[in-house]
Image (tube, rainbow, N blue to C red; front, side, top):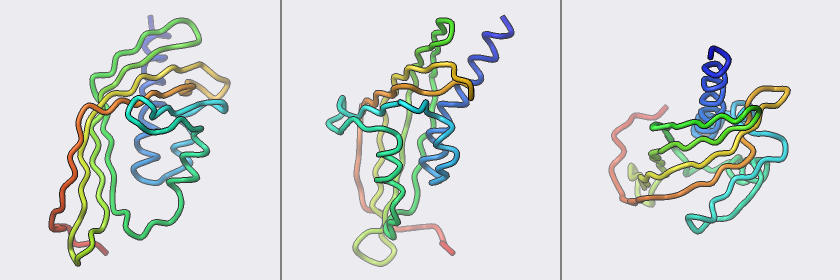
Length: 149
């Protein structure tokens, strides 16, 4: 029983490494989410399937317009099966990029679900496949109300 509770905590930690690593551009955190042969599949929402390394390379390039991102996870349900697991989580995402005019932000809000397959590795629980589903999305232009330094 205690081992299963620890597994669940460790799985949720791996899921959060993805969000924190991506949102904060802390790629060392991002790396703690995935197994070496993992895949991230955005095809259910019209995107592409790629490795975490490919996604990191694409998103890790300097982008002066990028301001912020947040991807909180909630409603996580985990099914353990020995050294593998399935997890389902809802997410809500907020991103912000500089707009065309001074002080303008292009905000993208959305929400959806992650379906994850995980495996216990020598380094701990890691995502082997993440499928991403978008349920809703809204893009709008707003005034930046944050003083940035």
